[in-house]
Length: 219
Image (cartoon, rainbow, N blue to C red):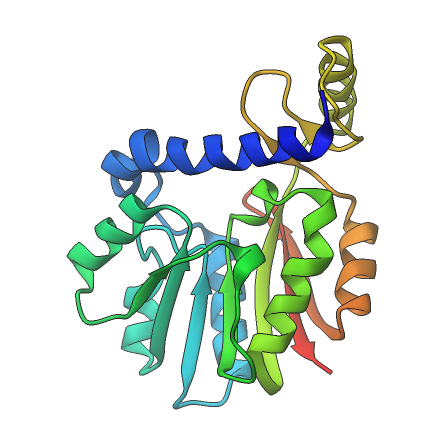
């Protein structure tokens, strides 16, 4: 199978999955905010200069908007799932949203901060540099980005890669696709290298809630 076509199919399947399976009960199943996420979000907000506007990239149902709203921030949400955006609109009808993937972010020097929480595992390795570059361009000078990287057991990931290859899938190391879905688990060292190449300085890192957390600043 040709990889480019396969990745396009995986992206379409992910959008469909969020529209049909996750959106109806996302808030009930995954609406809680975990401890490390809250600590790092608070750290991020202390770094940003209020008042201003924050982009919630891959915002889903607006899980973090009540916190941002209470802190006095302007918010804009983007997501490639229209149904997830509609759920967010039910809770916060006045917050502007737009259906958009992380790969298509067009903004330039617009936001004081960007959050992308629990979403980058859906990004293919080929697209990581593009997405980080889009974040960098969208931020104002000295703006901050908080994003998370999902963690997986290394041995289980190696087995998933082997299973994908055995099925004839055009997987690369770190991809988990043999069960029909798709996740990509890059090494933390690789993420640091991509962030540096995109023009970010590291400010804070943490591990918790089955994620690795990064706060970086636009250099």
